Amino acid sequence: MAGKGKARKQEMRRATRAATQRVADVSGLLEGTSIQRILWIDVLIYLRSVQNRALCTHLHALGVRDSLSHGSVTLHFSLFRFLAFPPSLLSSAAMSQSNPQDTHWVTQLRGRFIVFDGPDGSGKTTQFRRFTDFVRTQGLTVCEVREPGGTGIGEQIRNVLLDPKNEDMDIRCEMLLYMASRAQLVAQRLGPARARGELILADRFISSTLAYQGTAGGLPIADILRVGQIALHDYWPHLIVVFDVDQETASKRLNPLLDRMEMKGEAFHRIVRQGYLDQAKSDPDRYLVIDATVSADEVFQRLCAGLRSKFAE
Image 1 (tube, helix red, strand yellow):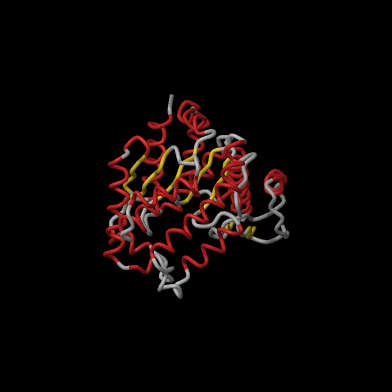
Image 2 (cartoon, rainbow, N blue to C red):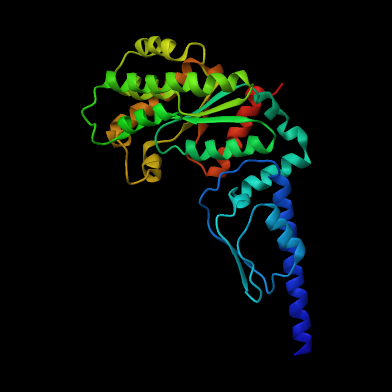
């Protein structure tokens, strides 16, 4: 019994040291970052005792304030903010810190305006969040916005645009409402961010209007661009990243509670996809097309590689 007890204690000491190092590694990677407390899977750390001071110190330094009760076999920390990153992203961050040349291109993004766009169900918003967190770990200040929305007025317009009850909305009204939200975004968010030299990342922009209301909706592209000149002035993106996905794959990814735009049907969304590809073909220097049918990790790797090729010195 004594031998088993000693072995058990040694095992628990090893587990505690490993957990402590894990927390230290993660806290080092994410030091100084601003990560939203997104809903992740609850974290269960199985330890025999909670008396390891180093572990508790690291947890409290990271803002974890859950109760630490003696004698419990489980330390339960829900919504662990530093584990909001998926393991693959942590690995990427660790690699970039060990070899700074791998992320030197990120510094070239200061003051740039990059749009993440693509058909509904392409996974662009997932990549948007992941990339935003990644560049922040590299020290960049980011202004992140979504469309429609991004401002108090824009969010009210968003509610009107996406409400399924507004099914009788005319396509010209639809386009002008998107542009109105965009004009407010430029005045209230993008202008000040550009003046501060921040990286601006937008989840959709005028490229969406060209694809949805233009190619798929039937409005002349020239008319949309003329209204865009009024709404945007000179706030046009340096790069539009299009996450390309076929309709079959996209439909499997969509939330079953569809908004008004998502409810327009498969034929409409096939034309939307073609609209994005046509834009990229006509202006390859300002577009980057990413195959979004593969895994999220592979998409992220291709995204970083593509941006590196566009912005590296």
